[in-house]
Length: 67
Image (cartoon, rainbow, N blue to C red):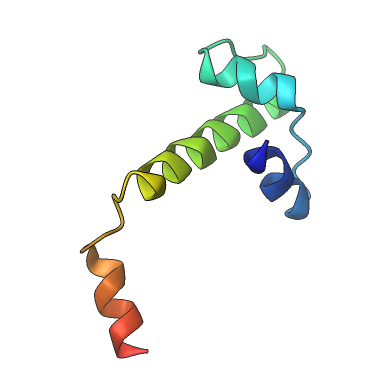
C-alpha cells in the first residue's frame, strides 16, 4: 500500500490490485499500465532492500556524512 501512495504523489496512479499482480509477475498487456506495474514492483523491491538494512554501510552513508 505504501507503494500505491508513494507513486500516487508522483502522479502515477497504480491501483493496489495492479501492484499485487506485478509482485506475482502478472503484468497487464496494456503498455502504460504495465510500465506503472514495473515501477511499482521496483518501488517494493527497494523498500524491502531498505527495510532489510541493505542501506546500512552503503555509499549513501558517505553522501549523508559529507552533506
